[in-house]
Length: 75
Image (tube, rainbow, N blue to C red; front, side):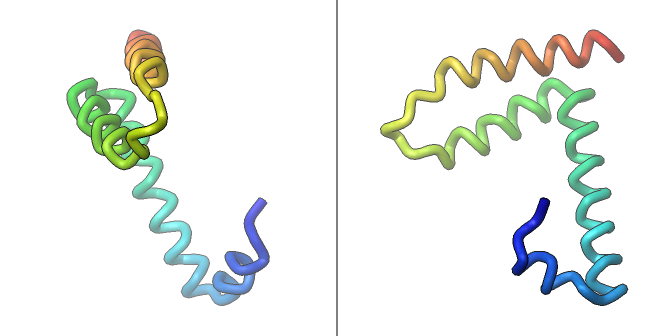
């Protein structure tokens, strides 16, 4: 479900086409994260670097590594 603002900003066919293009790029990035462990690690560090210092994200980093590893094994 999207917000009303998103709905209102995507009423035209051109808006829809742009949204679909962005969704496809996001999906490709997701696949790259699942298939490329180095890329996944760099992406995760990039995200973690944006987390405020007062939040402890150590456990989530460990969980992310296990999750990516488990998913990669299924390919």
